Image (cartoon, rainbow, N blue to C red; front, side, top):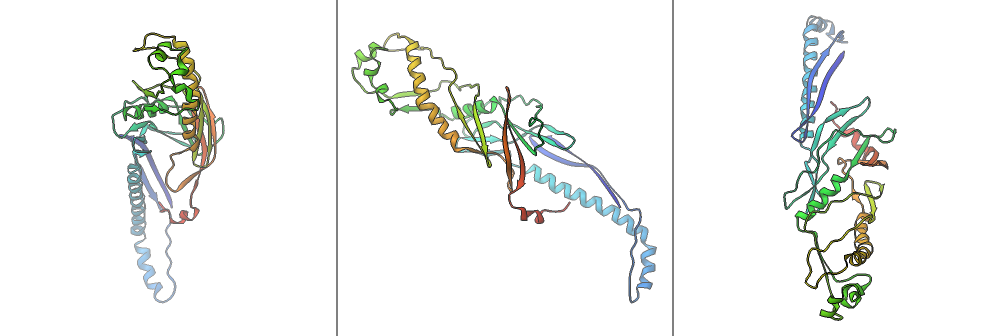
Length: 314
């Protein structure tokens, strides 16, 4: 008996659609033998209806395959289109482009952008057809991140109103007293001598970053650290007159390196769970970096090997 089927997976409105384009079954030889009792009598009927039995088998098997394909298609259509990360952001899990097939692999591209659950965000990604590689190694899973992913996260938090901070505690508390600024902004000290201050930080637009840092992976989590490469500051308005922005920029740089970067790295150090299908886990993750992308290469294993026996047989 020979069974042949041709299937295709297409991107349909951000979900995967599975369709069996061709399916057939051919039974060349069919032998049914009965033993004992009146088997000699019934054997004649079986031989007489051999062609009908063969035709029934050739009909039922493709129907069962197509039926199982429909169930798998429903499963693919039911994959989550977004995954909530917190009360502000969600990860867009819709598929972009059609799957790409290799000799021993299939590539699925998902949006991967962060979206706001409380405000509308723009679509930063142009969905190019990427050419991905794990540096010549053969891995089951490859996750690729580019700067659009990080910028989409920043935009989502900005649109949600989360980029506003009031700082009243810093490692060097003298920075939040006018006495510490009397040589940098003299008028500030003259108007408010030896007064304590709070630093009110509010973003007027969504920040855009050029991503750089160190990324490590362990288990199902990815960890990272970032550093400040460049920073510039300009004066938009002031109620205490003009002052030298180069001096202010140096002080703010110290603040960013001693307060903001450690705060951000403390969150990155907790790790973020990588998106994997329930019931599976990642194995032997390693990081590949390029000038345009950050890629995580990994194999996939069943979280519970005993579940293999419970999987449906197509």
